[in-house]
Image (cartoon, rainbow over all chains, first blue to last red; front, side, top):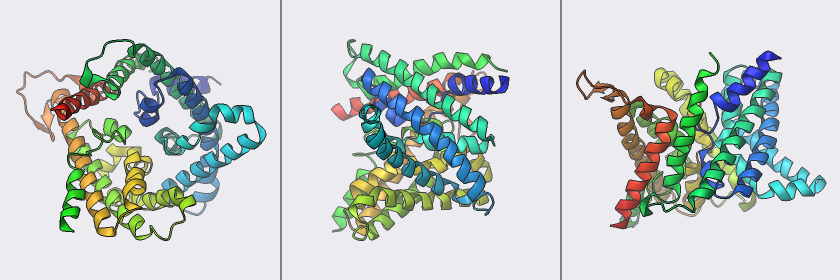
Length: 192
Length: 197
């Protein structure tokens, strides 16, 4: 149990997917201008990432490994993720329309979110077992959501500030992300 | 006709140079620009994948049904990424280890899908080839520029050759994650200033 807690903390804070591993930056800068969109994206990522983590683990251990096809990992994972996102979208639309209305427009964007494929590949690289894969996928997604929501809150304030012309928009966004990343850097001392 | 080819090639070098003018593909830009060597290696991989995928997508542009085109593009790109991954593993193993998961992640680099969708699926093979090469080389140049700043300030070296005397104290902030964000942000700012003039 303790191992899982350590793993979760390390994935959320110390190895934060956005600010420390540089994954998923396109949606990070794209949807963080308003709080509502950031929360929607964060929830969609948590939802898809946990499922993608579980499914890619099964694909890797029961299909690719026994047939010595591990070099097809990239190709099969991206297809699995694309199909999964489509499936989740259709399922939600039919059965849970309320959730679909909330996540709807962010779901298709997740296919090309490199955080999803990235986490699946990290899980394989670290050779996690199934339970660890679930914990790490969930924690990485929570870390993504945390950073995204924090960043959106800062960005809403920046709009009110007088920013020099060339620095506006993405440029000041990246500098702010750097400062946020510096804050997360302090977590490095937590686990030895 | 040759004029068109030259235009498609050169626009990738300045007018539409990624990731500064086309703000796409930021993750590898931040992650692999710690040293110039990594940046050039990543750039080469992207040039190869982008050129090949542009050619194939352009050849198949009349065969692929509209509804499933994105999935088809991703499969084409993923195939070439797998080729690059295996080739790098065989011939440049140390670089392969340094770039790590960012090689398979070329699949989800928005630049590749963006060029397939916006350019190669609508234009002839020769033009797509020029476009792929141009954007690829432009991307490599931007990565190398960013990496030069970070490596010189962060390690005091350029392509592993020391540029400062022994009294230089490395500014290690630059090669850590926060430095990557700040450095890219400031470079975008400089590009915006140049665009104005």
